[in-house]
Length: 319
Ligand SMILES: Cc1cc2nc3c(=O)[nH]c(=O)nc-3n(C[C@H](O)[C@H](O)[C@H](O)COP(=O)(O)O)c2cc1C
Image (cartoon, rainbow, N blue to C red; front, side):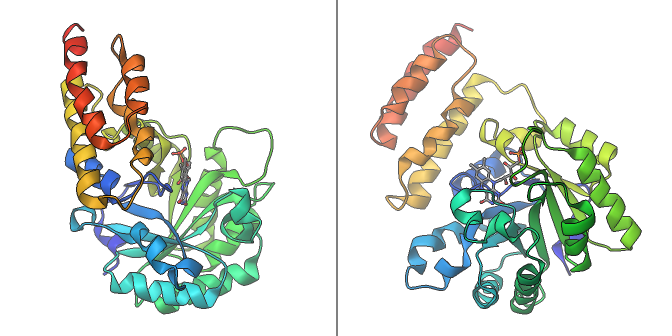
């Protein structure tokens, strides 16, 4: 049975984020409050099918506590997508998501990620290759509203014709100018089009969601079946609990757990500097917080950071 039939709607998920949502961060989130669904960071299918496989395979590492979890693939060659889907389905993932939305220049310029927007011929081949290789796992696409212009009646319609299990729409174009905020009215049009077409594809909306309350409001307002939350989780690993009253002691405890887990899971495999983006989530909201963050930014390893944590307690006890 597809994972999407067993999860209660709306489905609130943690967005895939390269160098952010690895197994460690997902487990940190699990320890306080899990979303309905996780995604891996995207993994390149060409890399996964090359001799350099060992360099990218860490992106598919997960622990069972993170289930249900979807593996996200990106690339250009349908044959590689087929083989990658076989690998992923053998690894016990709950579904496969195809990235057709990444707007990073070096990826889209190669025709990958958002470079696939409006390339319907290749996109169709890729989707079919993943379906063939997935051994019955549900297949989804994460994309944007269009390349430069909104393309609900073109690009999104094409994707809905592919009978995907889920279509996640990030409410921006890849190269459009002007509109900075995600356009949820356009996301809502995707839902309306899906209904008009009589398709059963679930539609998840994505873009600029700051809290669980807002996610649920947007489900009601825009009719989506789920919401994917990205950047807001970096600064708030508690986001899926809906709690706003996180005491500083609790923050520091989770910070320490995050650091410990990083050592256990990655050892020396990953650069500890990738943890720096999380410091603000744990150390803020008291006098001296900025100075402490600045000081731990200079640390040369995790032990040095942990050695500084006790110096925070006298400061927070003054609050
Ligand atoms: C640091 C970073 C890395 C990202 N990596 C991926 C990725 O690997 N795959 C993907 O589909 N989107 C990726 N995205 C896009 C997010 O999944 C999401 O679509 C975007 O951040 C908008 O959602 P938000 O406003 O909730 O952050 C990334 C975004 C950020 C900020």
